[in-house]
Image (cartoon, rainbow, N blue to C red; front, top):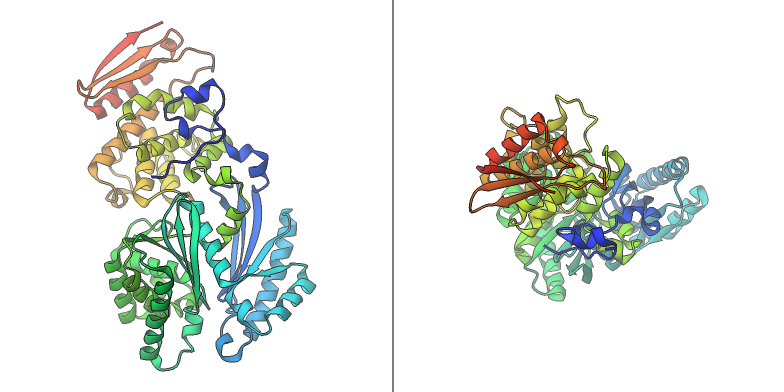
Length: 522
């Protein structure tokens, strides 16, 4: 895992804290980050025109508002050289609406970019002028390489330090960009968007020959690309939904969804044989998007065969998120998106903001031996342990699990979502049997399930020990070879160690299969 760089460690509490790299001053309160706390961007694509308003912790933003209009601006551009007339009217109407929405939300000026359809069409400049005249919005028409760069930056928003090949498919183009060490490398663009593939002569045979030839040329430029392939774009997301449906996959979160080359091949064949209307309905895909899926599937199949990536990951983050990333100072880019989001949630929703840090320090001895990547999840769980306190007690455990597994959080694999969700479930419940999440637990092995249970019960006990900041805290000590869990009680802590706290401590020890020892210390 790429270890985030912490540029804001300060004060004695920061330098003595275990796993100190997790605990820089939260940057969502920094003026440079607060300037990005609510940002509106518009993507004028070949298929759709979309407004996204980001809110919250800029490093891992929430989607305050998200609206898409399927305009098909690029339909027919390769034949007529001009934007789709109907799509143009719809796009102008959408942009007019988006500008009024932005004014109502009190947003600063919207950032609007247009991609392949507008840059390729002869009437693209006239369309931009009309939009400026009618709405006051300036459209930045970007070339294919810039589109590739912004999409790759969107991937880096969710995966800091990632390496591999980013593939962004739109309606009229497909871009590829290398990423490594948090930076974007070589970039190429092509006309392999499904709207343009419709117009290729020679039917399916001619189209597939064109796809093969184009990808071979792209490979010559980029060379071998055997690392991870990141897929960005609506057509790829639709194919991923179909893959989930085919596999009966239980967690319907597209971001960080993984596919193998074999799965891609099986899903392409599944699409070719399926009744597309029935499949569209079963997977919740729009008719406009579904009409492009078979063409996009042909491209994906050849793309995977050409580059042979080691694995394939879906990214819900793309060009719009890349536009946000573009505005970030480097120290914000270097932060872990998961930890920043959890710290923002704690500050906003917890009863005692800041206690998550103390809780992590208290339970840390139990988790000294776990890999660094999972200690990061332990930290995230401690920050989130109290943010759902307003939920009804009968449903609080399930609410925590739902929030962790389905929330818009970057920097989390699906297995890590389930681990985090299970830990938070056990923060409020000793048992997980009989919940509606049984099918999701299969995404992590039994060892990780037990560890998540221990984490949840450790937080459940530690949460009983709220103290003033100047009080002397007790501590846990864990001796794994002896299977001994020791609790050291300070005088300030003794009054808090009542019957309920003791019962939770014993439940934690039972999950550790440990003997207990309670000591009073000064």
